[in-house]
Length: 221
Image (cartoon, rainbow, N blue to C red; front, side, top):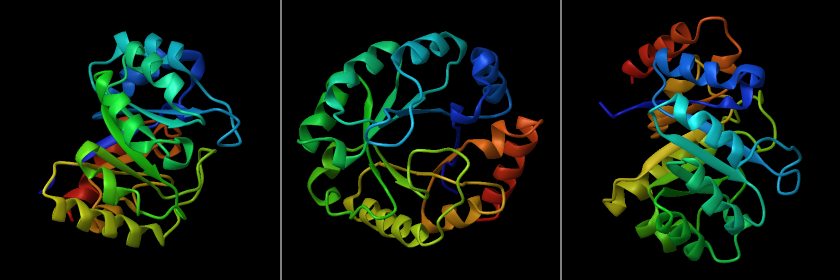
């Protein structure tokens, strides 16, 4: 059985008590904290920056997975690494030099990854698999929380899983967007091993019940 990881997205958390929220979700069984950064430029929304990452870092021991939906991207990478990020991913459209940006993330002591929107072609992967620790597949168009899962992205997840397996490399395959109890197994069957969920977890009164239910669905795969 693959090592499945649940990564709640704090985009859906109560920002008035964010430290408590991340502690509670880790106690409930989260493996990773997913940290969505939007710049109102690359995507039509504005969220949080390195200061918030630094603020929540002392509250949890699990990895913080920073998803940069910003353009340009290089300038802010060292700031997030310094703020306590463990994983940093970005969109290929946001970098003029993808290989260099991936190396910048690694040079700053973090795991590096690329993010693919539902309609972004996968050809970038052919040239940088040796610099990837994680590939994040968006199953919604980025910019807003609470969107519905786009089913045709399952084929794309399967295609990436095949590329990872053929490379022989240990690369995480994460999926983000509309992940809920009733579709997490389908994403796992397609090949994902790490699952971002925002409103499906933080929008519910009992975080542990949701995470346990997700793990029960994953156990059936």
